[in-house]
Image (tube, rainbow, N blue to C red):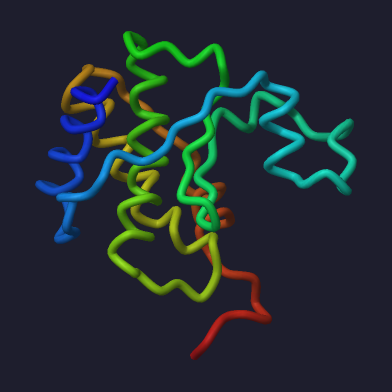
Amino acid sequence: MKELILSLFLFISTETSYNTDLPIPKILFLPEADLVKMYLGEDNDSSNYNPDDLWAFYNIENKTIYLRDTWDQYNAWNKSILLHELVHYVQDMNNVKFTCTQEMEKESWPLQQKYLRQYHGVIWDYDQLWFLVISTCPVHLQTY
């Protein structure tokens, strides 16, 4: 796993100006239901949440990446999920400031897409309108 993370750090460093000479982040594997519960918080109802929408997340408070316990290091999509979360870790460790957490996605989705295409020959054409929605701060947080 360490070698995979280092190779993903290398990809991030070649595609961004971030310092990736960083410690390997803590990574924990959780069952899907626990992952969703942790992501939403104990007080939130996860019964209406589609678990297919959540494969992993980065917790900025404890500097930990959480992955589904079904994550497979040999699967191209799963590797790209780890890359996506590592981008958030690198952003955090480089003290990048965002108006809202959604802004963090502006880099991670395109980098994940490029990684899949460049290293695995996988074409991932995500919906651009959806990307705009999930990578844009709510109106009350936007500055002009």
